Length: 310
Ligand SMILES: Nc1nc2c(ncn2[C@@H]2O[C@H](COP(=O)(O)OP(=O)(O)OP(=O)(O)O)[C@@H](O)[C@H]2O)c(=O)[nH]1
Ligand SMILES: [Mg+2]
Image 1 (tube, rainbow, N blue to C red):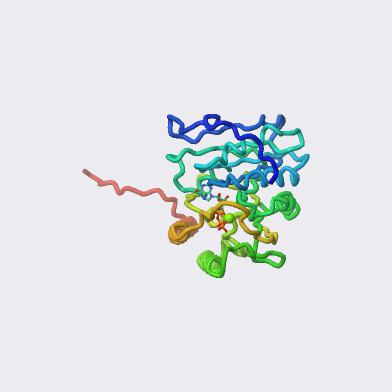
Image 2 (cartoon, helix red, strand yellow):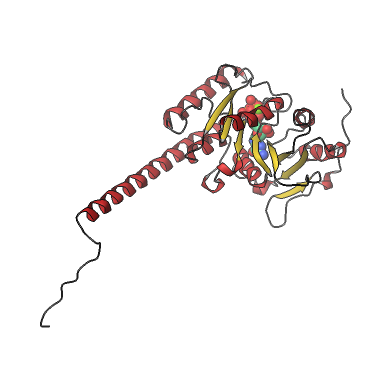
């Protein structure tokens, strides 16, 4: 068993903010200079058994790059203090570490709002979102960003469903079937927006931050990539295959409740898409009407008949 670094005392991680907002706990001095090349954004909830290995492997994968690792943490266990402990061995080559710890009263939306909170706070030109339980190989992080740069894509999905990808780590036949059915449903509901995206359920993706309008998103629960894809028209996408590994330690947070949240999300996104299409049709109709009026010399000014002799 490798020796664990000392864990800072509990009060080193502040408790709930009196103003009720999530607070940022800077865990290492921010790198000087302009924007970073990338932020690795890791949403965590009770992943104390995984974060040490994750930080080690990300450190090796990102050595020498201008990068940071940002944890957005909703844990009740030692996760944030374990990350804090790792700043003791920070080196100039290692990515900077930060954590945003959200007290229980600002965790609404769960994983989805953790990701958007992190995207808003990230300092990288690219953000790579990944799970904290080592099911997503940290070694692929630079490859996702490079694929985006090479192809000009705004968003690169690490997919389990392309050649070279594998969903091996999904726990059991039932989980695989549910994941496959959810993917099919999403692609059937949003064929245009998800065109060319085989794995909209993936939690592993790289996004060019300036390509996103965070205000357009309504995050709720696990499927934040689907939310981004459907609500961000015009995003250029690309996919890279990867093998979804097994959770290394701790418990899954996937649940029936998350399944219901996904169903709600599909209904909400479909309604929003229909409303947007309706508005676009109305705009087109109005524009066609104006063009017709212009052709007939109609100036748009209403002539008010005068009452002679009044
Ligand atoms: N900040 C935050 N992170 C969360 C929340 N729920 C889950 N996570 C994290 O999101 C990632 C994905 O959750 P998992 O429980 O691994 O979900 P999964 O990969 O679909 O399920 P398994 O295959 O069983 O592991 C992990 O890093 C979790 O710690 C949440 O409410 N808030
Ligand atoms: Mg997992």
